[in-house]
Image 1 (cartoon, one colour):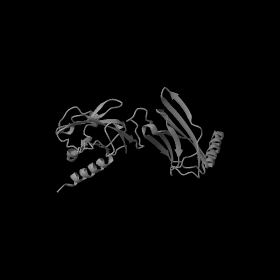
Image 2 (cartoon, helix red, strand yellow; image 1 turned 180 degrees about the vertical axis):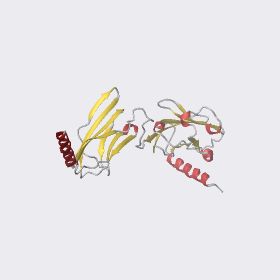
Image 3 (cartoon, helix red, strand yellow; image 1 turned 90 degrees about the horizontal axis):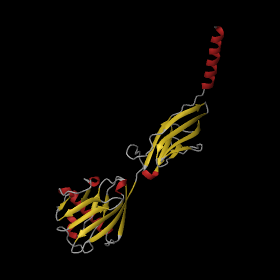
Image 4 (cartoon, one colour; image 1 turned 30 degrees about the vertical axis):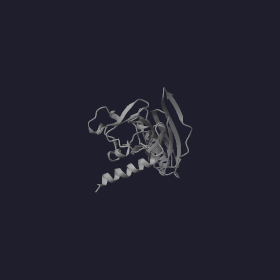
Length: 265
Protein backbone atom coordinates (compact mmCIF):
# COMPACT_ATOMS: atom_id res chain seq x y z
CA UNK A 1 0.00 0.00 0.00
CA UNK A 2 1.25 3.50 -0.85
CA UNK A 3 2.08 5.92 1.92
CA UNK A 4 0.37 9.32 2.15
CA UNK A 5 3.35 11.22 0.64
CA UNK A 6 3.53 8.76 -2.27
CA UNK A 7 -0.20 9.17 -2.90
CA UNK A 8 0.25 12.93 -2.93
CA UNK A 9 3.07 12.66 -5.46
CA UNK A 10 0.93 10.46 -7.69
CA UNK A 11 -1.95 12.92 -7.54
CA UNK A 12 0.35 15.80 -8.42
CA UNK A 13 1.90 13.78 -11.22
CA UNK A 14 -1.54 13.03 -12.64
CA UNK A 15 -2.31 16.73 -12.66
CA UNK A 16 0.97 17.43 -14.42
CA UNK A 17 0.28 14.84 -17.10
CA UNK A 18 -3.14 16.32 -17.81
CA UNK A 19 -1.77 19.88 -17.75
CA UNK A 20 1.07 19.04 -20.14
CA UNK A 21 -0.87 16.82 -22.53
CA UNK A 22 -1.04 19.60 -25.11
CA UNK A 23 2.63 20.52 -24.76
CA UNK A 24 4.81 19.49 -27.69
CA UNK A 25 8.57 19.84 -28.18
CA UNK A 26 9.25 23.38 -29.39
CA UNK A 27 6.00 24.83 -28.02
CA UNK A 28 5.87 26.90 -24.83
CA UNK A 29 3.70 26.41 -21.76
CA UNK A 30 3.05 29.24 -19.30
CA UNK A 31 2.83 28.56 -15.57
CA UNK A 32 1.66 31.30 -13.18
CA UNK A 33 1.96 31.03 -9.39
CA UNK A 34 1.92 33.33 -6.38
CA UNK A 35 5.20 34.07 -4.63
CA UNK A 36 5.84 31.60 -1.82
CA UNK A 37 3.80 28.79 -3.38
CA UNK A 38 5.16 25.74 -5.23
CA UNK A 39 5.40 25.67 -9.03
CA UNK A 40 5.11 22.50 -11.12
CA UNK A 41 6.91 22.81 -14.46
CA UNK A 42 5.53 20.15 -16.85
CA UNK A 43 7.72 18.13 -19.21
CA UNK A 44 6.25 14.84 -20.39
CA UNK A 45 6.67 12.66 -23.46
CA UNK A 46 3.49 12.04 -25.44
CA UNK A 47 4.77 8.51 -26.13
CA UNK A 48 5.00 7.85 -22.36
CA UNK A 49 8.36 6.17 -22.98
CA UNK A 50 10.22 4.99 -19.85
CA UNK A 51 13.07 7.43 -19.08
CA UNK A 52 14.37 5.92 -15.84
CA UNK A 53 17.70 5.12 -17.52
CA UNK A 54 17.82 8.24 -19.66
CA UNK A 55 19.01 11.77 -19.01
CA UNK A 56 17.03 14.98 -18.74
CA UNK A 57 18.18 18.46 -17.87
CA UNK A 58 16.32 21.57 -16.71
CA UNK A 59 17.79 25.04 -17.23
CA UNK A 60 16.62 28.59 -16.66
CA UNK A 61 17.70 30.43 -19.78
CA UNK A 62 17.16 34.09 -18.92
CA UNK A 63 18.44 36.56 -17.97
CA UNK A 64 21.45 34.28 -17.31
CA UNK A 65 21.61 30.54 -17.84
CA UNK A 66 21.24 28.58 -14.59
CA UNK A 67 21.33 24.85 -13.91
CA UNK A 68 18.01 23.99 -12.27
CA UNK A 69 17.81 20.18 -12.19
CA UNK A 70 19.60 17.28 -13.86
CA UNK A 71 18.75 13.59 -13.88
CA UNK A 72 21.15 11.01 -15.30
CA UNK A 73 20.10 7.37 -15.19
CA UNK A 74 19.15 7.44 -11.51
CA UNK A 75 21.53 10.15 -10.29
CA UNK A 76 20.34 13.71 -9.77
CA UNK A 77 21.17 16.96 -7.98
CA UNK A 78 19.43 15.88 -4.78
CA UNK A 79 21.50 12.69 -4.73
CA UNK A 80 25.02 14.08 -4.90
CA UNK A 81 25.24 15.04 -8.58
CA UNK A 82 27.21 18.35 -8.77
CA UNK A 83 26.49 21.45 -10.85
CA UNK A 84 23.17 22.83 -9.60
CA UNK A 85 22.92 26.61 -9.31
CA UNK A 86 22.86 27.61 -5.64
CA UNK A 87 19.70 29.67 -6.18
CA UNK A 88 17.74 26.43 -6.70
CA UNK A 89 19.61 24.22 -4.27
CA UNK A 90 17.28 22.32 -1.95
CA UNK A 91 14.13 23.64 -3.66
CA UNK A 92 13.76 21.47 -6.77
CA UNK A 93 12.74 17.83 -7.08
CA UNK A 94 11.32 15.46 -9.69
CA UNK A 95 8.67 12.71 -9.68
CA UNK A 96 10.51 9.37 -9.40
CA UNK A 97 7.37 7.24 -9.70
CA UNK A 98 6.43 8.90 -12.99
CA UNK A 99 9.72 8.42 -14.87
CA UNK A 100 8.50 5.11 -16.28
CA UNK A 101 5.65 7.04 -17.92
CA UNK A 102 7.98 9.54 -19.60
CA UNK A 103 7.35 12.31 -17.08
CA UNK A 104 10.37 14.57 -16.49
CA UNK A 105 8.41 17.32 -14.73
CA UNK A 106 9.84 19.12 -11.70
CA UNK A 107 8.47 21.06 -8.76
CA UNK A 108 10.11 24.27 -7.50
CA UNK A 109 9.22 24.85 -3.87
CA UNK A 110 8.71 28.17 -2.11
CA UNK A 111 8.99 30.25 -5.27
CA UNK A 112 10.46 33.75 -5.26
CA UNK A 113 10.05 36.52 -7.83
CA UNK A 114 13.54 35.97 -9.36
CA UNK A 115 12.40 32.44 -10.31
CA UNK A 116 10.32 34.05 -13.06
CA UNK A 117 11.64 33.46 -16.56
CA UNK A 118 11.96 30.94 -19.37
CA UNK A 119 12.99 27.35 -18.68
CA UNK A 120 13.93 24.48 -20.97
CA UNK A 121 13.59 20.75 -20.37
CA UNK A 122 15.87 18.59 -22.54
CA UNK A 123 15.18 14.85 -22.63
CA UNK A 124 17.99 12.84 -24.17
CA UNK A 125 16.57 10.07 -26.35
CA UNK A 126 17.84 8.91 -29.74
CA UNK A 127 16.88 12.42 -30.74
CA UNK A 128 16.89 15.15 -28.09
CA UNK A 129 13.51 16.67 -27.31
CA UNK A 130 13.30 20.16 -25.84
CA UNK A 131 10.28 21.63 -24.06
CA UNK A 132 9.95 25.33 -23.16
CA UNK A 133 8.13 26.63 -20.10
CA UNK A 134 7.60 30.21 -18.99
CA UNK A 135 7.27 30.64 -15.23
CA UNK A 136 5.65 33.78 -13.87
CA UNK A 137 5.89 34.28 -10.10
CA UNK A 138 3.48 37.05 -9.13
CA UNK A 139 4.77 39.01 -6.14
CA UNK A 140 2.83 39.16 -2.90
CA UNK A 141 2.83 42.71 -1.55
CA UNK A 142 4.94 42.84 1.61
CA UNK A 143 7.70 44.86 3.28
CA UNK A 144 10.91 44.14 1.35
CA UNK A 145 13.08 46.90 2.80
CA UNK A 146 16.61 45.56 3.17
CA UNK A 147 15.93 42.71 0.74
CA UNK A 148 15.63 44.66 -2.51
CA UNK A 149 17.72 47.75 -3.41
CA UNK A 150 15.50 50.81 -3.69
CA UNK A 151 12.69 49.46 -1.53
CA UNK A 152 11.35 52.42 0.43
CA UNK A 153 12.11 52.59 4.16
CA UNK A 154 9.32 53.07 6.67
CA UNK A 155 7.73 56.53 6.19
CA UNK A 156 8.52 59.36 8.59
CA UNK A 157 5.34 60.99 9.90
CA UNK A 158 4.82 64.15 11.95
CA UNK A 159 2.05 66.33 13.31
CA UNK A 160 2.64 69.84 11.97
CA UNK A 161 -0.32 71.50 13.66
CA UNK A 162 -3.23 70.41 15.84
CA UNK A 163 -6.34 72.19 17.09
CA UNK A 164 -9.54 71.07 18.75
CA UNK A 165 -11.08 70.37 15.32
CA UNK A 166 -8.31 69.29 12.96
CA UNK A 167 -4.69 68.22 12.58
CA UNK A 168 -2.21 68.76 9.78
CA UNK A 169 -0.03 65.70 9.15
CA UNK A 170 3.17 65.25 7.17
CA UNK A 171 4.56 62.04 5.68
CA UNK A 172 8.04 61.70 4.17
CA UNK A 173 9.36 58.79 2.10
CA UNK A 174 13.05 58.99 1.19
CA UNK A 175 15.44 57.28 -1.19
CA UNK A 176 12.95 55.02 -2.97
CA UNK A 177 13.35 53.47 -6.43
CA UNK A 178 11.20 52.95 -8.42
CA UNK A 179 8.98 55.92 -7.59
CA UNK A 180 6.51 54.85 -4.88
CA UNK A 181 2.84 55.70 -4.56
CA UNK A 182 2.30 57.42 -1.20
CA UNK A 183 -1.12 57.65 0.46
CA UNK A 184 -2.69 58.66 3.74
CA UNK A 185 -5.33 56.25 5.06
CA UNK A 186 -7.57 56.06 8.10
CA UNK A 187 -7.75 53.07 10.44
CA UNK A 188 -10.31 51.37 8.16
CA UNK A 189 -7.98 51.61 5.17
CA UNK A 190 -9.92 54.40 3.45
CA UNK A 191 -7.74 56.76 1.40
CA UNK A 192 -7.75 60.29 2.81
CA UNK A 193 -7.72 63.45 0.69
CA UNK A 194 -4.23 64.92 0.53
CA UNK A 195 -2.35 67.75 -1.12
CA UNK A 196 -0.33 67.27 -4.29
CA UNK A 197 2.79 65.22 -3.44
CA UNK A 198 6.09 67.10 -3.25
CA UNK A 199 8.57 65.06 -5.29
CA UNK A 200 12.33 65.44 -5.62
CA UNK A 201 14.69 63.12 -7.46
CA UNK A 202 18.39 62.34 -7.11
CA UNK A 203 19.53 59.95 -9.81
CA UNK A 204 17.05 57.06 -9.69
CA UNK A 205 16.01 57.73 -6.08
CA UNK A 206 12.85 59.60 -5.11
CA UNK A 207 11.98 61.63 -2.01
CA UNK A 208 8.26 62.27 -1.57
CA UNK A 209 6.41 64.43 0.96
CA UNK A 210 2.65 64.19 1.35
CA UNK A 211 0.54 66.51 3.51
CA UNK A 212 -3.01 65.96 4.68
CA UNK A 213 -5.46 67.58 7.06
CA UNK A 214 -7.67 65.33 9.18
CA UNK A 215 -10.64 66.21 11.36
CA UNK A 216 -12.53 64.70 14.25
CA UNK A 217 -14.76 62.84 11.79
CA UNK A 218 -11.78 60.86 10.51
CA UNK A 219 -10.87 57.67 12.34
CA UNK A 220 -7.50 57.52 14.11
CA UNK A 221 -4.83 56.11 13.91
CA UNK A 222 -3.77 57.47 10.54
CA UNK A 223 -1.48 55.47 8.27
CA UNK A 224 1.01 56.69 5.69
CA UNK A 225 1.51 53.92 3.14
CA UNK A 226 4.23 53.71 0.47
CA UNK A 227 3.70 51.18 -2.32
CA UNK A 228 6.07 50.03 -5.08
CA UNK A 229 4.07 47.50 -7.09
CA UNK A 230 6.90 46.85 -9.55
CA UNK A 231 8.95 45.16 -6.82
CA UNK A 232 6.06 43.91 -4.66
CA UNK A 233 6.96 46.24 -1.78
CA UNK A 234 4.70 48.02 0.69
CA UNK A 235 5.60 49.73 3.94
CA UNK A 236 3.77 52.02 6.34
CA UNK A 237 3.77 53.78 9.67
CA UNK A 238 0.86 55.05 11.73
CA UNK A 239 0.08 57.90 14.07
CA UNK A 240 -2.68 58.37 16.63
CA UNK A 241 -4.07 61.89 17.00
CA UNK A 242 -5.82 63.15 20.14
CA UNK A 243 -7.64 66.32 19.19
CA UNK A 244 -7.17 69.01 21.83
CA UNK A 245 -10.59 70.17 22.96
CA UNK A 246 -9.34 72.73 25.52
CA UNK A 247 -5.80 73.33 24.36
CA UNK A 248 -6.56 76.85 23.11
CA UNK A 249 -8.02 77.91 26.48
CA UNK A 250 -5.14 76.31 28.39
CA UNK A 251 -2.55 78.10 26.28
CA UNK A 252 -4.37 81.44 26.74
CA UNK A 253 -4.53 81.04 30.52
CA UNK A 254 -0.85 80.11 30.68
CA UNK A 255 0.05 83.20 28.67
CA UNK A 256 -2.03 85.50 30.94
CA UNK A 257 -0.50 83.93 34.03
CA UNK A 258 3.01 84.33 32.65
CA UNK A 259 2.42 88.01 31.81
CA UNK A 260 1.02 88.56 35.30
CA UNK A 261 4.14 87.08 36.86
CA UNK A 262 6.36 89.32 34.75
CA UNK A 263 4.32 92.38 35.77
CA UNK A 264 4.72 91.43 39.43
CA UNK A 265 8.50 91.54 39.08
